[in-house]
Amino acid sequence: MEKVNISEKFSLFSDYWSPKIAGEINDMHVKFAKLKGEFIWHKHEHEDEMFLVIKGKLLIKFRDKDVHLEEGEFMIVPKGVEHLPIAKEEAHVIFFEPKSTVNTGEEVNERTVSKLPSL
Amino acid sequence: MEKVNISEKFSLFSDYWSPKIAGEINDMHVKFAKLKGEFIWHKHEHEDEMFLVIKGKLLIKFRDKDVHLEEGEFMIVPKGVEHLPIAKEEAHVIFFEPKSTVNTGEEVNERTVSKLPSL
Image (cartoon, rainbow over all chains, first blue to last red; front, side, top):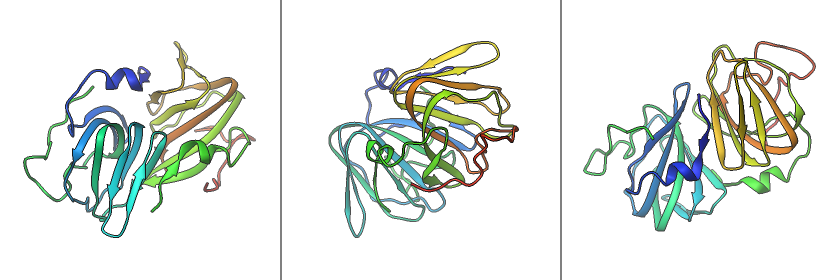
């Protein structure tokens, strides 16, 4: 049972789109990821997903609108809603989502990360 | 489905120890609270509880140690563990915890808030 310093944890890795587990709250995971570039359109059939921007900017595209997140902002993408995260420059993002969540949602492809390391 | 600007949300209320719901992720709530002074010793039998410090400092006392949280730091207090949050000066804190969580845990007293408003 230790405290976590967010910026310290982000200094421990440099790969993109590869979430690391930084904590668990009952059946939920707290994940850290560095994002850069464009991800893929996907959705999570059963899981809501919270994106909290710690550093940089994150664009989340939806089929009907764009949402621009800045540092100190978050958004919860409800289950079943298609979305496409894009970070023009490197962004540091914390995810809160059920442990069952797979990064690429219903899609399974070369960007799927199925075994997440712990930070 | 809107984004949330954290500091904007904190500017909307001024009462202490009275969590407001700012989002839900499946069976989890995201709660905002301003803390000042000393709370009470309590535990949550079934719920882990994450404290994320947005502004100020938060001391969490445990029976065997003290943990000092600063801005940009968080801690997850596991279910069943007694704790006492203390904020010497005003602190802004985001909580992530199961919807079933009651602020005073197993204790029910004048500090219990059973119906939480939404922000």
